[in-house]
Length: 238
Ligand code: C5P
Image 1 (cartoon, rainbow, N blue to C red):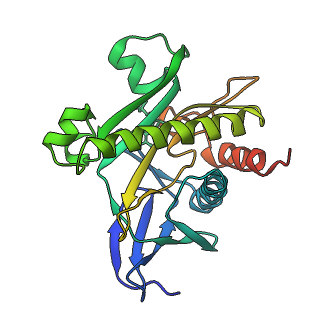
Image 2: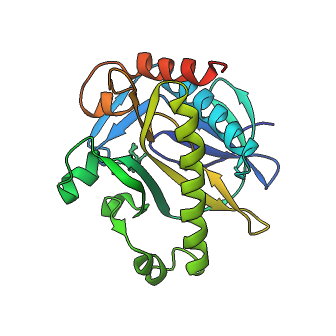
């Protein structure tokens, strides 16, 4: 399968058409951005690490009944994925309060939430990805009907429960994460995009060290070493 014309370029990935209209090639970039792309950087090998991490996590989720866009890994930085129309909603799940939640609501950083909190944000860089409630989603026609929002929340909670347990066994706390979903040609909702330390927060269970993109956001040093540690723990057999 070969890359044809570039369909989309995001902050961390490029999507290319292929000779098959139902399949795309996703390329994981080494670029890092934060604060609505006001902070930019790059680390050699970051894309390859995220490709490996996301592939492993999508395979685990598939095994647990979550349908995803992943078809197969092609090489270090490329995946073959099913074409789907991305729903422009970033679905965020939080187990522990940190980041924008603490700033927005004044909850003390590090507070364990009484239950996993699911939030929706509008996937719109020009507007700075604002928080949305269900009615905003309907008024903006981001989904067909309320049922889709219910499904997105159910899928997000299921993904959280699978991954939270998986990482707990590897001494990693899944603090929060963002996922995106798409709709394929048969109308099925698929988990799309990626799940990686670019889109999740992971804290070491013992030291509480941050092993995710907050290292870049907060200038805490190399992300690569931390992402390698996350991959090694994912690959650790139980
Ligand atoms: O910044 P905030 O606290 O809202 O982020 C919550 C989670 O969602 C973090 O894991 C962050 O990495 C992820 N996120 C993301 N892309 C965004 C916004 C948040 O991956 N545009």
